[in-house]
Structure formats: structure tokens, C-alpha cells
Figure (spheres, one colour):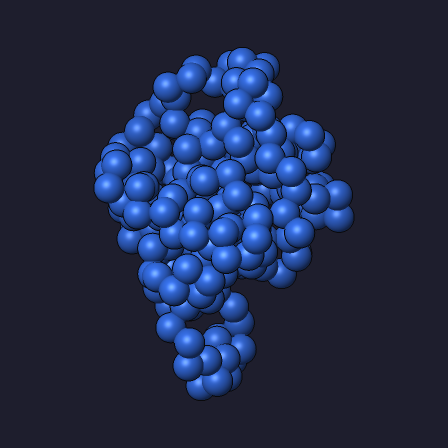
Length: 199
């Protein structure tokens, strides 16, 4: 189940506590919760966010994590040119989701937390080449994102397997930040998803 949403006041307090202006773009970086996927995706997520930052110099990145992989995340993030704010505390994470403008996420149930908070997202995922080949043969569904599946749309852009590359991800994130239409389309799909899942 998705966790309860933080209030607007909690979201504003989170931004204030971390010195993030109300109009400063805030992006969540969610490279998964298992060591294997994090090590495979974090470098590409960082590269995509660096390119996004070139377009949006005031961008702030928040990296929520879970206890088991927090040391790995902190160690990796410390080497990023613009170290993100790493969050472990559950209340902080909830507030960050409510405060965010955008998310770059590995596929999985996190997309429902983002949908509940109406955070436009880009999903990116890759796996071991052999797994990629096997799953590619098995997978006839054209999307892996729960919001797309439940809303029966393709509102959430996906970069999977060989397409999981920094430049197209960054371009799509920038488009989502800049385009009210693209954001509205995703939010409508998220609202429909939540409605169909009975919140």
C-alpha cells in the first residue's frame, strides 16, 4: 500500500529545512531498492540528472533510500559532482515526495507512491543482458509501469533495457519540467490510476 501523503505544509517545511526555494525545481532520484539494480542504474541516473542540471542550474536532487542500501547509496552519491540530499527518515521521505516537481525512478511500486503524490515521472530500468533477452521474449505487454497499465495510457515515459540512456532520459525530464501539457497528461493518468485502485 502507498504511504499516507504529507500535507502541503509538511512539503513546504521540508523545502525550507533543506534550503530549497518554493520555485526551485526539486527532482527525486529513485534508482531502486536492491544493490544490483542500484549499482546498474545509479551511474546512468546521475548522468541524466547532470544533463538536466545543465538545462536547469538551480535543480536540487533528493535521493530517498532504505536502511539496507543506505551505506551504498551514500557512498555512491558522495562521488557525484553535485551530491544529492540522501534521505533515510520515513517522515522526511514522505515530505520529499509531496514537495517534488519530478522524479526519475526505476520501475516498481514506487510509481504508485509518486502517482499518489502527483509527481510527474520518467521510468528507466535495465537488467543483465541475458535477463533482458529472456524477459524481452516473454514480455508482450508494451509497458512495465503500473500507472500506464492501470490507467490504460502511455502517459509515463519509459526507457527500458537498451533505451536506458542518459541523454534521452534527460531530454524527457526537461520536457516534463517545462511542459504544462505533458505534466497535466501524466497527472490525469495518475488520478485515474488512484481512482481505479481505490486510493
